[in-house]
Length: 390
Picture 1 (cartoon, helix red, strand yellow):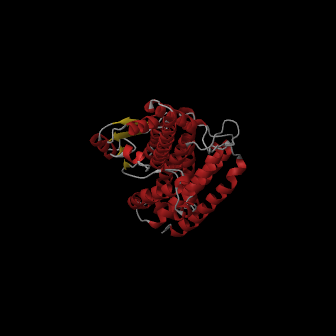
Picture 2 (cartoon, rainbow, N blue to C red):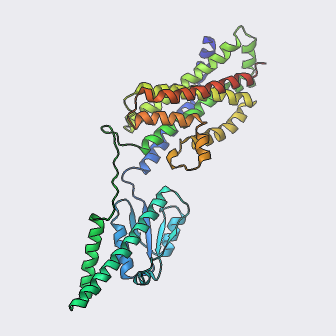
Picture 3 (cartoon, rainbow, N blue to C red):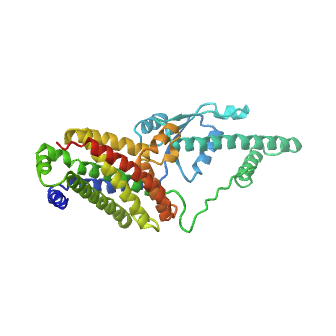
Protein backbone atom coordinates (compact mmCIF):
# COMPACT_ATOMS: atom_id res chain seq x y z
CA UNK A 1 0.00 0.00 0.00
CA UNK A 2 2.82 2.42 0.84
CA UNK A 3 4.34 1.95 -2.60
CA UNK A 4 1.00 2.87 -4.21
CA UNK A 5 0.73 5.97 -2.01
CA UNK A 6 4.29 6.97 -2.89
CA UNK A 7 3.56 6.48 -6.61
CA UNK A 8 0.42 8.64 -6.42
CA UNK A 9 2.28 11.37 -4.52
CA UNK A 10 5.02 11.45 -7.14
CA UNK A 11 2.40 11.73 -9.86
CA UNK A 12 0.61 14.49 -7.93
CA UNK A 13 3.62 16.78 -8.34
CA UNK A 14 2.86 16.98 -12.05
CA UNK A 15 -0.92 16.78 -11.77
CA UNK A 16 -2.03 19.29 -9.15
CA UNK A 17 -4.04 21.54 -11.47
CA UNK A 18 -7.48 20.23 -10.42
CA UNK A 19 -6.66 20.71 -6.73
CA UNK A 20 -5.46 24.30 -7.14
CA UNK A 21 -8.15 25.28 -9.65
CA UNK A 22 -11.05 23.97 -7.57
CA UNK A 23 -9.68 25.61 -4.43
CA UNK A 24 -9.34 29.03 -6.08
CA UNK A 25 -12.72 28.68 -7.80
CA UNK A 26 -14.49 27.82 -4.54
CA UNK A 27 -12.99 30.80 -2.72
CA UNK A 28 -13.60 33.18 -5.62
CA UNK A 29 -17.25 32.27 -6.15
CA UNK A 30 -17.91 32.26 -2.40
CA UNK A 31 -16.55 35.79 -2.12
CA UNK A 32 -18.47 37.07 -5.16
CA UNK A 33 -21.81 35.54 -4.18
CA UNK A 34 -21.38 36.40 -0.51
CA UNK A 35 -20.53 40.02 -1.29
CA UNK A 36 -23.57 40.40 -3.53
CA UNK A 37 -25.79 39.38 -0.63
CA UNK A 38 -24.16 41.47 2.06
CA UNK A 39 -26.04 43.49 4.64
CA UNK A 40 -25.71 46.67 2.51
CA UNK A 41 -27.48 45.13 -0.46
CA UNK A 42 -30.75 46.90 -1.39
CA UNK A 43 -32.63 45.64 -4.46
CA UNK A 44 -33.77 48.33 -6.88
CA UNK A 45 -37.42 48.49 -7.92
CA UNK A 46 -38.29 51.06 -10.63
CA UNK A 47 -41.77 52.60 -10.46
CA UNK A 48 -43.82 53.78 -13.46
CA UNK A 49 -46.46 56.29 -12.30
CA UNK A 50 -49.06 56.10 -15.08
CA UNK A 51 -51.74 57.76 -12.95
CA UNK A 52 -49.68 60.81 -11.87
CA UNK A 53 -52.25 61.63 -9.21
CA UNK A 54 -52.05 62.86 -5.65
CA UNK A 55 -52.73 59.42 -4.21
CA UNK A 56 -50.21 57.68 -6.47
CA UNK A 57 -47.55 60.17 -5.38
CA UNK A 58 -48.44 59.52 -1.73
CA UNK A 59 -48.13 55.78 -2.39
CA UNK A 60 -44.69 56.23 -3.97
CA UNK A 61 -43.45 58.35 -1.06
CA UNK A 62 -44.56 55.66 1.37
CA UNK A 63 -42.71 52.98 -0.60
CA UNK A 64 -39.56 55.10 -0.63
CA UNK A 65 -39.58 55.07 3.17
CA UNK A 66 -38.70 51.37 3.05
CA UNK A 67 -35.20 50.80 4.39
CA UNK A 68 -34.70 47.51 2.55
CA UNK A 69 -35.49 48.58 -1.02
CA UNK A 70 -34.48 51.30 -3.43
CA UNK A 71 -37.64 52.51 -5.21
CA UNK A 72 -36.98 54.87 -8.13
CA UNK A 73 -39.24 56.66 -10.63
CA UNK A 74 -38.77 55.95 -14.33
CA UNK A 75 -40.70 55.48 -17.57
CA UNK A 76 -42.22 52.23 -18.83
CA UNK A 77 -39.67 51.48 -21.57
CA UNK A 78 -36.71 51.94 -19.25
CA UNK A 79 -38.32 49.82 -16.53
CA UNK A 80 -39.12 47.02 -18.98
CA UNK A 81 -35.59 47.08 -20.37
CA UNK A 82 -33.96 46.88 -16.93
CA UNK A 83 -36.13 43.95 -15.88
CA UNK A 84 -35.49 42.15 -19.16
CA UNK A 85 -31.73 42.60 -18.77
CA UNK A 86 -31.83 41.45 -15.15
CA UNK A 87 -30.49 44.75 -13.80
CA UNK A 88 -33.37 45.20 -11.33
CA UNK A 89 -35.43 42.87 -9.18
CA UNK A 90 -38.79 43.77 -10.74
CA UNK A 91 -40.76 46.86 -11.84
CA UNK A 92 -43.96 48.34 -10.40
CA UNK A 93 -46.57 49.93 -12.68
CA UNK A 94 -49.16 52.21 -11.06
CA UNK A 95 -52.07 51.94 -13.49
CA UNK A 96 -54.29 54.79 -14.62
CA UNK A 97 -57.39 55.14 -12.46
CA UNK A 98 -55.41 54.54 -9.27
CA UNK A 99 -56.91 57.56 -7.46
CA UNK A 100 -60.36 56.97 -8.93
CA UNK A 101 -60.46 53.44 -7.50
CA UNK A 102 -59.60 54.71 -4.03
CA UNK A 103 -62.24 57.43 -4.23
CA UNK A 104 -64.77 54.74 -5.23
CA UNK A 105 -63.71 52.68 -2.20
CA UNK A 106 -62.07 50.05 -4.40
CA UNK A 107 -58.66 48.50 -3.95
CA UNK A 108 -56.37 50.24 -6.47
CA UNK A 109 -54.66 48.01 -9.01
CA UNK A 110 -50.99 47.91 -9.87
CA UNK A 111 -49.01 45.76 -12.28
CA UNK A 112 -45.73 43.94 -11.81
CA UNK A 113 -43.08 43.33 -14.48
CA UNK A 114 -40.90 40.34 -13.60
CA UNK A 115 -39.10 37.49 -15.28
CA UNK A 116 -39.22 34.98 -12.43
CA UNK A 117 -40.70 34.22 -9.02
CA UNK A 118 -38.50 33.88 -5.97
CA UNK A 119 -38.65 34.67 -2.27
CA UNK A 120 -37.24 38.17 -2.71
CA UNK A 121 -39.86 39.09 -5.31
CA UNK A 122 -42.69 37.59 -3.25
CA UNK A 123 -41.51 39.59 -0.24
CA UNK A 124 -41.50 42.77 -2.33
CA UNK A 125 -44.99 42.06 -3.62
CA UNK A 126 -46.23 41.61 -0.05
CA UNK A 127 -44.68 44.97 0.88
CA UNK A 128 -46.51 46.63 -2.03
CA UNK A 129 -49.83 45.01 -1.08
CA UNK A 130 -49.41 46.11 2.54
CA UNK A 131 -48.73 49.70 1.53
CA UNK A 132 -51.70 49.69 -0.85
CA UNK A 133 -54.01 48.56 1.95
CA UNK A 134 -52.49 51.14 4.29
CA UNK A 135 -52.96 53.96 1.76
CA UNK A 136 -56.59 53.06 1.07
CA UNK A 137 -57.38 52.79 4.78
CA UNK A 138 -55.69 56.07 5.69
CA UNK A 139 -57.35 57.95 2.81
CA UNK A 140 -60.78 56.67 3.85
CA UNK A 141 -60.15 57.71 7.45
CA UNK A 142 -58.97 61.15 6.34
CA UNK A 143 -62.03 61.60 4.07
CA UNK A 144 -64.48 60.62 6.80
CA UNK A 145 -62.74 62.94 9.26
CA UNK A 146 -62.77 65.82 6.77
CA UNK A 147 -66.46 65.35 5.97
CA UNK A 148 -67.36 65.25 9.65
CA UNK A 149 -65.39 68.38 10.61
CA UNK A 150 -66.50 70.34 7.55
CA UNK A 151 -70.10 69.55 8.43
CA UNK A 152 -69.69 71.25 11.80
CA UNK A 153 -67.80 74.37 10.79
CA UNK A 154 -66.27 76.04 7.79
CA UNK A 155 -62.71 74.75 7.38
CA UNK A 156 -60.08 74.28 4.72
CA UNK A 157 -60.92 70.75 3.60
CA UNK A 158 -57.54 70.20 1.97
CA UNK A 159 -55.68 71.18 5.11
CA UNK A 160 -57.92 69.04 7.32
CA UNK A 161 -57.54 66.07 4.96
CA UNK A 162 -53.74 66.31 5.01
CA UNK A 163 -53.61 66.57 8.81
CA UNK A 164 -56.02 63.67 9.23
CA UNK A 165 -54.05 61.56 6.77
CA UNK A 166 -50.76 62.30 8.53
CA UNK A 167 -52.26 61.43 11.92
CA UNK A 168 -53.72 58.24 10.49
CA UNK A 169 -50.35 57.35 8.99
CA UNK A 170 -48.67 57.98 12.32
CA UNK A 171 -51.27 55.89 14.10
CA UNK A 172 -50.71 53.04 11.62
CA UNK A 173 -46.99 53.19 12.25
CA UNK A 174 -46.94 53.36 16.03
CA UNK A 175 -50.35 52.21 17.22
CA UNK A 176 -51.20 49.35 14.93
CA UNK A 177 -54.30 47.35 15.85
CA UNK A 178 -52.26 44.19 15.57
CA UNK A 179 -48.54 43.75 15.80
CA UNK A 180 -46.27 40.76 15.61
CA UNK A 181 -43.12 40.66 17.68
CA UNK A 182 -40.47 38.17 16.65
CA UNK A 183 -37.67 37.22 18.97
CA UNK A 184 -34.82 34.90 18.14
CA UNK A 185 -33.36 33.20 21.17
CA UNK A 186 -29.64 32.95 20.61
CA UNK A 187 -26.53 32.37 22.63
CA UNK A 188 -24.23 35.38 22.76
CA UNK A 189 -23.25 36.60 19.34
CA UNK A 190 -25.08 33.80 17.46
CA UNK A 191 -27.98 35.32 15.62
CA UNK A 192 -29.17 32.45 13.43
CA UNK A 193 -28.84 31.71 9.76
CA UNK A 194 -25.94 33.33 7.91
CA UNK A 195 -26.23 33.12 4.14
CA UNK A 196 -22.54 33.86 3.56
CA UNK A 197 -21.54 30.94 5.80
CA UNK A 198 -23.99 28.74 3.94
CA UNK A 199 -22.37 29.70 0.64
CA UNK A 200 -18.88 29.02 2.02
CA UNK A 201 -19.89 25.61 3.38
CA UNK A 202 -21.81 24.62 0.25
CA UNK A 203 -19.06 25.62 -2.17
CA UNK A 204 -16.36 24.04 0.00
CA UNK A 205 -18.10 20.69 -0.20
CA UNK A 206 -19.22 21.08 -3.82
CA UNK A 207 -15.84 21.90 -5.36
CA UNK A 208 -13.91 19.45 -3.20
CA UNK A 209 -16.09 16.67 -4.63
CA UNK A 210 -14.58 17.22 -8.08
CA UNK A 211 -11.04 16.89 -6.77
CA UNK A 212 -11.92 13.73 -4.85
CA UNK A 213 -13.88 11.99 -7.61
CA UNK A 214 -11.28 12.74 -10.28
CA UNK A 215 -8.58 11.73 -7.80
CA UNK A 216 -9.91 8.22 -7.27
CA UNK A 217 -10.77 8.16 -10.98
CA UNK A 218 -7.05 8.01 -11.74
CA UNK A 219 -7.63 4.25 -11.58
CA UNK A 220 -9.14 4.58 -15.05
CA UNK A 221 -6.03 6.33 -16.39
CA UNK A 222 -3.87 3.64 -14.84
CA UNK A 223 -5.92 1.03 -16.64
CA UNK A 224 -5.62 2.99 -19.90
CA UNK A 225 -1.82 3.14 -19.70
CA UNK A 226 -1.52 -0.45 -18.37
CA UNK A 227 -0.20 0.69 -14.99
CA UNK A 228 -3.18 -0.96 -13.34
CA UNK A 229 -2.42 -4.28 -15.01
CA UNK A 230 1.21 -4.19 -13.91
CA UNK A 231 0.13 -3.51 -10.34
CA UNK A 232 -2.25 -6.47 -10.40
CA UNK A 233 0.43 -8.96 -11.51
CA UNK A 234 2.88 -7.54 -8.96
CA UNK A 235 3.20 -9.01 -5.44
CA UNK A 236 0.82 -6.33 -4.19
CA UNK A 237 -2.59 -7.54 -3.07
CA UNK A 238 -5.77 -6.14 -4.56
CA UNK A 239 -6.60 -4.65 -1.17
CA UNK A 240 -3.25 -2.83 -1.04
CA UNK A 241 -3.70 -1.44 -4.57
CA UNK A 242 -7.22 -0.22 -3.93
CA UNK A 243 -6.42 0.90 -0.39
CA UNK A 244 -3.46 2.98 -1.53
CA UNK A 245 -5.59 4.81 -4.07
CA UNK A 246 -8.36 5.35 -1.52
CA UNK A 247 -5.99 6.64 1.17
CA UNK A 248 -4.17 9.15 -1.07
CA UNK A 249 -7.48 10.44 -2.48
CA UNK A 250 -8.87 10.75 1.03
CA UNK A 251 -5.78 12.69 2.14
CA UNK A 252 -6.02 15.07 -0.83
CA UNK A 253 -9.70 15.65 -0.14
CA UNK A 254 -9.13 16.40 3.55
CA UNK A 255 -6.28 18.78 2.72
CA UNK A 256 -8.43 20.68 0.24
CA UNK A 257 -11.38 20.97 2.62
CA UNK A 258 -9.01 22.07 5.37
CA UNK A 259 -7.40 24.68 3.11
CA UNK A 260 -10.82 26.06 2.13
CA UNK A 261 -11.95 26.21 5.76
CA UNK A 262 -8.81 27.98 6.96
CA UNK A 263 -8.74 30.31 3.95
CA UNK A 264 -12.34 31.36 4.56
CA UNK A 265 -11.52 31.94 8.22
CA UNK A 266 -8.56 34.24 7.62
CA UNK A 267 -9.56 35.81 4.29
CA UNK A 268 -13.29 36.30 4.89
CA UNK A 269 -13.38 36.24 8.72
CA UNK A 270 -15.75 33.26 8.77
CA UNK A 271 -16.30 31.99 12.31
CA UNK A 272 -16.52 28.20 12.21
CA UNK A 273 -17.82 27.86 15.74
CA UNK A 274 -16.46 26.41 18.93
CA UNK A 275 -16.01 22.79 17.84
CA UNK A 276 -13.33 22.52 15.17
CA UNK A 277 -13.16 18.80 15.95
CA UNK A 278 -16.83 18.51 14.98
CA UNK A 279 -16.22 20.36 11.70
CA UNK A 280 -13.32 18.06 10.83
CA UNK A 281 -15.29 14.96 11.83
CA UNK A 282 -18.03 15.88 9.38
CA UNK A 283 -15.42 16.77 6.76
CA UNK A 284 -13.65 13.41 7.07
CA UNK A 285 -16.96 11.54 6.92
CA UNK A 286 -17.94 13.50 3.83
CA UNK A 287 -14.57 13.00 2.09
CA UNK A 288 -14.75 9.24 2.77
CA UNK A 289 -18.22 9.04 1.26
CA UNK A 290 -17.30 11.08 -1.81
CA UNK A 291 -14.16 8.96 -2.27
CA UNK A 292 -16.37 5.87 -2.17
CA UNK A 293 -18.78 7.54 -4.59
CA UNK A 294 -15.87 8.20 -6.95
CA UNK A 295 -14.87 4.55 -6.68
CA UNK A 296 -18.44 3.55 -7.50
CA UNK A 297 -18.55 5.85 -10.54
CA UNK A 298 -15.15 4.59 -11.69
CA UNK A 299 -16.57 1.09 -11.61
CA UNK A 300 -19.53 2.06 -13.76
CA UNK A 301 -17.60 3.76 -16.57
CA UNK A 302 -14.74 2.39 -18.64
CA UNK A 303 -12.60 5.45 -19.30
CA UNK A 304 -11.60 8.65 -17.53
CA UNK A 305 -13.30 10.65 -20.30
CA UNK A 306 -16.60 8.98 -19.48
CA UNK A 307 -16.06 9.78 -15.81
CA UNK A 308 -15.39 13.42 -16.70
CA UNK A 309 -18.65 13.46 -18.66
CA UNK A 310 -21.00 12.05 -16.01
CA UNK A 311 -19.38 13.47 -12.86
CA UNK A 312 -20.46 17.12 -13.36
CA UNK A 313 -24.04 16.00 -13.93
CA UNK A 314 -24.15 13.83 -10.82
CA UNK A 315 -22.17 16.12 -8.53
CA UNK A 316 -23.99 19.30 -9.56
CA UNK A 317 -27.49 17.81 -9.42
CA UNK A 318 -26.96 16.16 -6.02
CA UNK A 319 -25.39 19.36 -4.67
CA UNK A 320 -28.39 21.38 -5.83
CA UNK A 321 -30.81 18.90 -4.29
CA UNK A 322 -28.69 18.63 -1.12
CA UNK A 323 -28.69 22.37 -0.46
CA UNK A 324 -25.16 23.34 -1.46
CA UNK A 325 -26.43 26.02 -3.85
CA UNK A 326 -29.25 27.43 -1.72
CA UNK A 327 -30.84 26.77 1.69
CA UNK A 328 -33.27 23.87 1.78
CA UNK A 329 -35.57 26.05 3.90
CA UNK A 330 -36.80 27.74 0.71
CA UNK A 331 -37.72 24.39 -0.89
CA UNK A 332 -41.39 23.40 -0.53
CA UNK A 333 -41.48 20.22 -2.62
CA UNK A 334 -41.72 17.15 -0.40
CA UNK A 335 -40.20 15.05 -3.16
CA UNK A 336 -37.09 17.24 -3.38
CA UNK A 337 -36.77 17.33 0.41
CA UNK A 338 -36.97 13.54 0.49
CA UNK A 339 -34.32 13.25 -2.22
CA UNK A 340 -32.14 15.68 -0.27
CA UNK A 341 -32.00 13.17 2.58
CA UNK A 342 -30.37 10.70 0.18
CA UNK A 343 -27.42 13.00 -0.54
CA UNK A 344 -24.33 13.31 1.68
CA UNK A 345 -24.20 17.04 0.94
CA UNK A 346 -27.42 17.68 2.86
CA UNK A 347 -26.22 15.98 6.03
CA UNK A 348 -22.75 17.52 5.87
CA UNK A 349 -24.09 21.05 5.36
CA UNK A 350 -26.64 20.60 8.12
CA UNK A 351 -24.00 19.39 10.58
CA UNK A 352 -21.48 22.13 9.73
CA UNK A 353 -24.12 24.85 9.97
CA UNK A 354 -25.20 23.56 13.36
CA UNK A 355 -21.70 24.33 14.66
CA UNK A 356 -20.80 27.38 12.58
CA UNK A 357 -24.16 29.19 12.87
CA UNK A 358 -25.94 27.90 15.95
CA UNK A 359 -23.02 27.27 18.34
CA UNK A 360 -23.59 23.53 18.38
CA UNK A 361 -21.08 21.18 19.95
CA UNK A 362 -19.46 17.95 18.87
CA UNK A 363 -22.54 15.94 19.84
CA UNK A 364 -24.59 17.72 17.19
CA UNK A 365 -22.54 16.19 14.35
CA UNK A 366 -22.48 12.57 15.51
CA UNK A 367 -25.80 11.54 13.96
CA UNK A 368 -25.25 13.28 10.59
CA UNK A 369 -21.70 11.91 10.40
CA UNK A 370 -22.95 8.35 10.98
CA UNK A 371 -25.48 8.74 8.18
CA UNK A 372 -22.79 10.08 5.84
CA UNK A 373 -20.45 7.19 6.73
CA UNK A 374 -23.28 4.71 6.15
CA UNK A 375 -23.77 6.14 2.65
CA UNK A 376 -20.02 5.86 2.09
CA UNK A 377 -19.98 2.21 3.10
CA UNK A 378 -22.73 1.45 0.59
CA UNK A 379 -20.85 3.24 -2.21
CA UNK A 380 -17.62 1.51 -1.16
CA UNK A 381 -19.15 -1.98 -1.30
CA UNK A 382 -20.74 -1.28 -4.68
CA UNK A 383 -17.49 0.21 -5.96
CA UNK A 384 -15.45 -2.86 -4.96
CA UNK A 385 -17.90 -5.12 -6.76
CA UNK A 386 -17.80 -3.00 -9.92
CA UNK A 387 -14.06 -2.30 -10.14
CA UNK A 388 -12.47 -4.68 -12.61
CA UNK A 389 -9.21 -6.24 -11.45
CA UNK A 390 -8.55 -8.12 -14.66
